[in-house]
Image 1 (cartoon, rainbow, N blue to C red):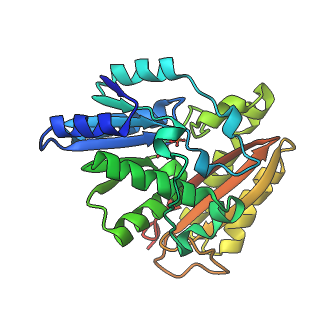
Image 2 (image 1 turned 90 degrees about the vertical axis):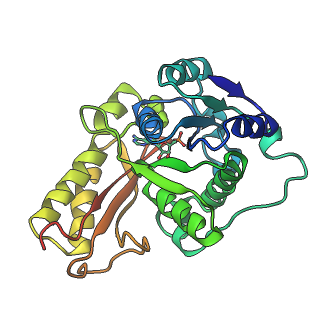
Length: 286
Ligand code: AMP
């Protein structure tokens, strides 16, 4: 497994691979089974697999957790070695954003609601770093998790709009046995918060059950989720949403017949902010 720190090294690696297909898994490290599931999928679908580990400062807001974001590079490299990854790219900030760096990739409408409304600089940071990684690696396919549903929608939009010649592959959300979505940020939770944090999944499952019984009132779906979340004293709701999966625009009242819905939420446990979602298919009861 090659461990590369510079863009020039990645370009050499890519050249040395000739025409081999390449799967890229961008991450911020502190790897868990959610990341590793994406790596395994990339391994199965490509001749070569690269993983990037970079805690991208541009996607953190000024009051967010950049400085305390968990890191364990030695463990990450051991895990990736076991998965048969060909190359790990670990750039530093100067390599990604030299002092005269001036550019940014902006995706407009689809970045406005949900996470974008609460984290106004987040998606420009994401699209800028992802565009750079796509240009640096020229991958055949790039792998992202459904856990970050809006990120997937934003990256797909960018790829369409700017004609990046690669496939975007989305892996399902990997969960703990009790339903909590795996996240590097789960490490911040106290024992009590960790026990309570299953409420995100419970709230999504409850709304999903209503959907499967035919509930199509978006207000009812949101209030089902909100009630369960608000019953937990340690949880503070940032938002709950029932949105059009294509535009991420919030539904008002009845969801049109045949349409699907993205149910999503962000919930604080003290300073730790967790997100989760479930994508409901419009075909479920039609
Ligand atoms: P991160 O390191 O948090 O930036 O995540 C890197 C990639 O892993 C992103 O595409 C995430 O959506 C994905 N990911 C994170 N958590 C999970 C999970 N629990 N299940 C599936 N994919 C995940």
